[in-house]
Length: 615
Ligand SMILES: Nc1ncnc2c1ncn2[C@@H]1O[C@H](COP(=O)(O)OP(=O)(O)OP(=O)(O)O)[C@@H](O)[C@H]1O
View (cartoon, rainbow, N blue to C red):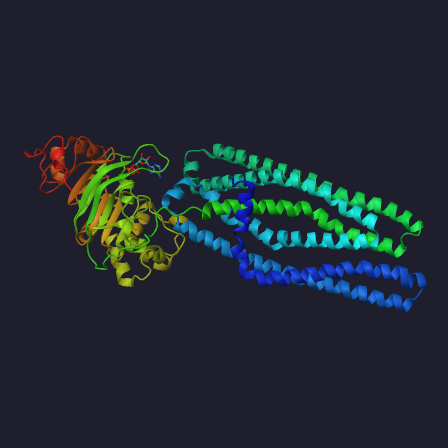
């Protein structure tokens, strides 16, 4: 949590969203001041009525002044209506502008940021926190300014009517000020705690909704419910404590003006009896003082609202102040638009996730020649997916560099890089949009023929059989499709438009043997024209690759053809035989029939595989 000064500054920094509405705010303030002026004039007219027409029994004068009071009352009502109408709509527009900037920023932020932040915390910032800020901009701020002006104006009028009582009323602001200071400090802590806990609950709800199947399948509903109840109870307790704090302070804010009123009534009556004050003066004094009750009573709410808005601004700025770690370089190097395969090279690449001890990848040296396909094989958790994620710059290398046609990928414009690199992840994500939109996510300009060709490669023509064909909206995260169908659509998305580099993380894992064979055959044709890096778990998929890189302990332990590695690197054989789809005790490709050119007892093979490492 930022220090107090920082939080005020964070709220102040949102002024750029208010700036376009400054003129509206000016008019609003003017309307509000006019309404307050009209309201303040009524007690003064009442005073003249009491001391004039009523005391002198002058019905015509009474009617005149009554009509004037009525007119002022109507004017006040109309002005308040206009103020509220305009006020809400400009605040909603400001909220929408902040929300779209926040969303755009979240989209720009690197993957590492999203790894660290709970989605519920982001969700609550984009919803609850922004609503708090909208309430402050539409009501809290305006009433804060207006109430101070009203208080000052009334205090001046009261002092002019009867200075000792006027000063008494003005002095009653001192205890109010002291209470509000203590209250705002305590309320700030409580509101930050509540807004954070709200984010935790949102995270839990989101996680539970996503993991519903797993929870049900493992019969963990009671545990999940208990976990949710615990967090919800915590939020409930904080919320109650916060409300009680406000209730206690509001009671005090109620008490002060009412006590002052009692003193004024008694002292005022004595003053009237002594002839120091007219009845009209006393009526006007009391009426004006009554006008202060609401501004004082609402003080607690306004302070609470301002504190919540500061907390919300603090939480929003935490996100907006995070700079994308992966961004366009200041002077991007152009990547020739040439279609066709690119040369991908890892030069002494090292990488470690922020906040973790020790690198995941070390001194990775690997070249994938144009048109070549290299499979990355290794034990689970050795860093294969991490290695692939470096190519589209989901993360940046910690040491060394990755080049594309000799250019460091960090020197390229991100849009150029990502247009050149087609990616399919282990977990195929589909968005709540049509199949067509999902497919053309990275290439909105793709035409029907290109989409058809991509679907053919991925054996995903089933998409045409969906109720509305490619216009069918797939459910949240594509849940209405099977795992294999989602994977094939994700593969089609990656190969769409024949990117110069293809990065596929175990793209066929969810497919049955028959479909896998069909996809492999089609993919083999695509791979001929592109540079590809594939993470492969199944031995059968290794056949797609020209060469294989064995990753162990974050290093490339061996590089060679499948048959070379099979023959010469025991660790490779061990990894493949442990892989799903490998027959127990036998590795496909260990015989010459399974992978042409492979021999189980390659005479040139080095048992350690050290000589096979080349790039
Ligand atoms: N976002 C992350 N933050 C911190 N550590 C991570 C993150 N993602 C992965 N790791 C760690 O990095 C290491 C390599 O993970 P990675 O997913 O690259 O392995 P992998 O070889 O692809 O595994 P698998 O074959 O099981 O998919 C693991 O120890 C993992 O715990």
